[in-house]
Image (cartoon, rainbow, N blue to C red; front, side, top):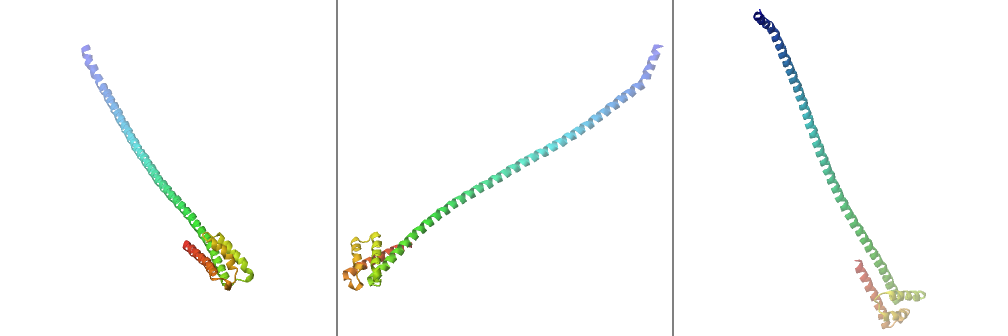
Length: 202
């Protein structure tokens, strides 16, 4: 009896075993498919992350380059501005120096003009005294004026200076030839002085 039932039990278990194996195989296949799908999703997500990281890295590089470019541009502008300011300062100093020089030259010229006017005035008065065209009551005053000017004048002959007051107070017709020559020498000296001042004024 036992030898007959064993094959029957094996025969009865075979379909169930096949079903179990088929279910297991199906279940494994489903899990493998799910795992493959999950892996695909993960790979896609990683690819997206890598792409975003690459874009972000590129954006960072671009921002750094732009910042560096802006810094270089700013540095160039700052350098140019500094050079321009330096040039303006140099020009301003040159203009200031030029203005000072012009003012000094103008002041010197004005001083020379004042001296020239005094010399010309003295020369005119001296000529009027020599020709007798000064009013009699003004003669002494004008002689003193001429004498005071020539006394201060640098380079005028001392002996001639001493003789002039007495000569100039005489009427024109009463002057000797020597006295006329002395007065004439004073006039010539004043004319030469005017010529020198004119040359100095350019």
